[in-house]
Amino acid sequence: QVQLVESGGDLVQAGGSLRLSCVVSGNIIRIGDMGWYRQAPGKQRELVATITNGGSSKYADSVKGRFTISRDNAKNTLYLQMSSLKPEDTAVYFCNARINPLWGSSNVYWGQGTQVAVSS
Image (cartoon, rainbow, N blue to C red; front, side, top):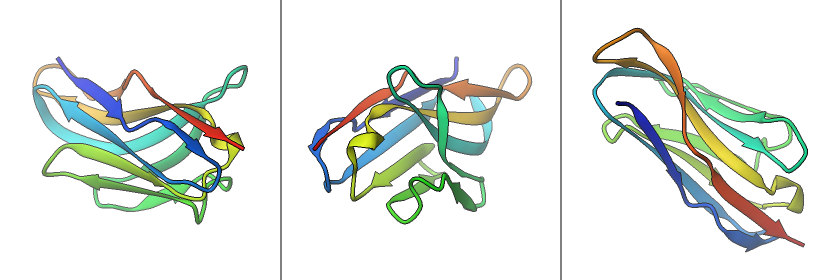
């Protein structure tokens, strides 16, 4: 059973920082591309940032220069360092990953989300 568990969400003031983590567990052969997405109330889920297994990253324009995605392959963990937070960053943040499980074919798995709230 593959699981992704996010943590690190909190209520912060505008201009503050947070670091989100996403730990992957289960019987896994390989973790491929990973990413962070977010969904604000009443809006569709949107891409925040992605990172390949080799460490190449991409960002949404809205977070470039403020957010940094990284991963520790030895710990099966994905991170999102968020700085200069704005009220519009308020959302539930989800991680996902393309995973080759020990049994079955490659698939994209999602975490349950962690709430980030930024007050003005």
